[in-house]
Length: 200
Image 1 (cartoon, rainbow, N blue to C red):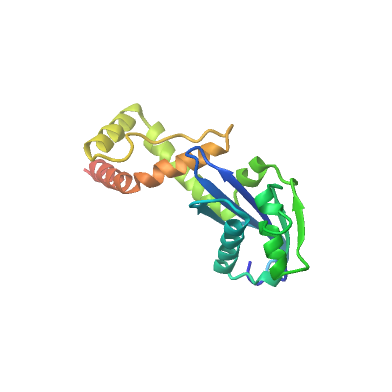
Image 2 (cartoon, helix red, strand yellow; image 1 turned 30 degrees about the vertical axis):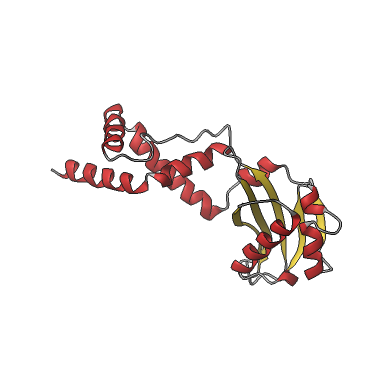
């Protein structure tokens, strides 16, 4: 992405189900090596205290800098049209235009669910691998699922079961990932124990 001659950003600030403000940043760019247009998740930032234009501006700059993108490479930005994004003087877009006066800005083009629902190939591969593991642990047999739940209770894990992803609601991906991540060490122990039992 950092090699791309220009990058277009799509940025959305929203609140998750736990009332945490999060900033999601997606990029569209031309991959000069593959000679094709690409999309990728730049990052997700938890906005700790407030969601003022200044906070969003600083979060965008930090994410872009971490990915090695120069401010002049960013030629466009699409936002949800909130005042903190498009405010004339203190909005994040106004601040970004201070860094790059040629920046094109758009708002309300991409519905939030579309912005968040599709995964890049790399992230989709991770999600698919994780879903296969969850299906193996939960769905291969009711006995195995009962054993997993009992094991998680015995080791005082943060949760006593895994969640299944529901394709109807894209938000469930986040919940499934969060639950999986919170008990990842316990799952590794369970799989190691399961593997040794099957070997004997």
